[in-house]
Amino acid sequence: MRRRIAAVLGGMTLALAVVIAVPAPAQALPSCPADTICLWDGQNYTGDKEEVTPNTCAALWLAFWDNKAESAYNNSRHDWYLFDHWTCGGDAYLVLSGQAVPNLGFMNNRVSGVGL
Image (cartoon, rainbow, N blue to C red; front, side, top):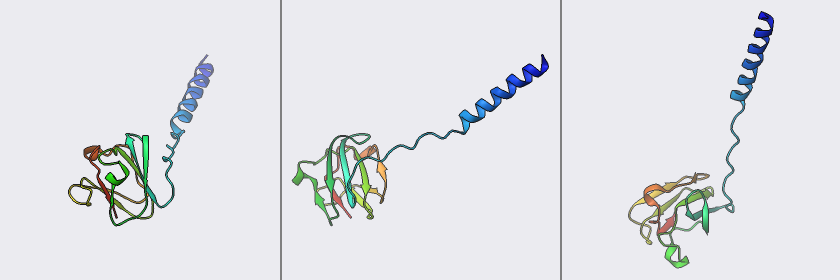
């Protein structure tokens, strides 16, 4: 009887160790062309997408994207700033090279300019 209990407990311990040791699957990065920063009008990379290529300052109102962004993915080798003014001034949010931001927080629906 003791051997049976020991075998069951040993098997349960092994099963628990396997469950704990399995890492969670990595979350896939959102779709965005190379050398581009992509903005979505929904959180977690949902909704309509705008793709911006490197520029000193891009005014989003020209693309009818003023104050719409809620998430971003920087798939470029540059760090980008998201600004609340179309001339790339005012409050800014830094998105580092390779960084995915599922929720822009205080900049949700405030991004009017994008610049390097």
